[in-house]
Length: 118
Image 1 (cartoon, rainbow, N blue to C red):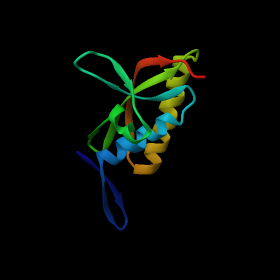
Image 2: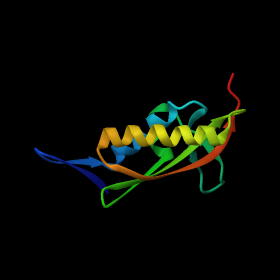
Image 3: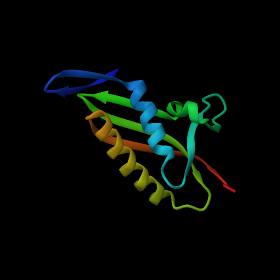
């Protein structure tokens, strides 16, 4: 499903894959986020995704031109998960709304793992 921005010049359609990639890139910029996670349905294990696969840890649902975003993340050991989540929500919401011109109605965060960072 795609989203639509309405401008004085006409309509701009934004593919959900673009929104997923942008949300994933915005998420990994946040303090305490090690990266995006892909969860295997078969064995339930979370896998840290490489930079080029960030959109696999994101799900975007578009309803009535409003976005619901699911972020599957891996956090750094020793950080406050609630502080990371709050920062993540604010950052991704702001960046996506500025980028796409659509309202972010809800962001769900799924912490899939913790990693020790050197």
